[in-house]
Amino acid sequence: MGARPVYLDNAATTPVDPRVAAAMAECLTADGAFGNAASTHRFGREAARLIEAARGDVAALIGAQGTEIVFTSGATEASNLALLGSARANADRRRHLVTARTEHRATLDPLRRLEREGWSVTRLAPDAEGRVSPEAVREALRADTLLVSVMQVNNETGVVQDVAAIGAVCRAAGVLFHCDLAQSVGKVPTAGLARLVDFASLTAHKIHGPKGVGALYVAEGARPWLEPIVFGGGQERGLRSGTLPTHQIVGFGRAAALVASEGAADAARMGTLRATLWESLGALPCVHLNSPLAGGSPAILNVSFEGVEGESLVAALGGIAVSTGSACSSATAEPSYVLRALGRSTELAQSSLRFSFGRTTSAADVDIAAAAVRRAVTRLREVAP
Ligand SMILES: *Cc1c(COP(=O)(O)O)cnc(C)c1O
Image (cartoon, rainbow, N blue to C red):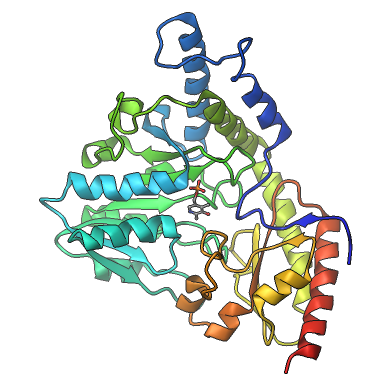
């Protein structure tokens, strides 16, 4: 087995780009912009200036205004703010929310919390590829529906939803639309999304920025529908109190700017790597593709290997980092609820691996992984009862 470690788990997190790390380092020490952006002296003003520049770079990812960006600790907090904050702000009027069974836990779990507090939640079943139909969204709407939450790119399969059509359904019905874009940025076009959604969750660590920082896009018109879930100094126009982490936000901004200039080329390269990997793995007998090759995220390839436990396969792969199911829920041995919702059997869901690519993934990484997976699958099938 190759000794060189190979990282194919970029959908869980990506390494920080060295250019991002350099920008962050300049915001930490006494000779850098370490000030508190809320202070009015020159140290504070310098931090505030850098933060506002980063805000513009993050907003530009989706064609938003800087004033519509609320910095958070990541996409999880952003989605919690959108869902809990809008539900509580409108508790006396609208108590129904709509989502899909294949959403990330950062969406499903706040909605489950709201359900326990008395809200009503509809969870739509996707088709066999994982797509939620705009018609199903329309049919789920009620007179008291507040919000629809459907992600653009699924983190396990890479399937891309028709957010333009779903957004149009919501707009026509006067219902808010929240979209989780954590896996979208740098993989699929996001430039015009601000016009289509009311709230969008973003995160830095999936685009070669640091962990621990993200943002909620709040469309200007949706601001009155949202109240904060964190209270304190009133930062971020009252929507997210707490001292702004200059180094994190500057890192996020630099990562966003790099995606703007290099993201399309990165995505094209990832698409080629994904095609190469599938060409090799798809030649094995009894393998099932769980990712749509046409139109899906170029960064994700999810495959089930009949008769092989995903966990055994991961163990057999040694130095090759891949994921079974989503990293966030793989602490439990449960088969992926996303693949189950697509109609895959428990066995096939348990025999799946997610390979995911990033800016630093090389063709050699993919070749090493493909050879190792083919060897391991063949061997595990030989020893299987
Ligand atoms: C990673 C991820 C999240 C969580 O983002 P954090 O910044 O880690 O909180 C939410 N949704 C999706 C689709 C993700 O991939």
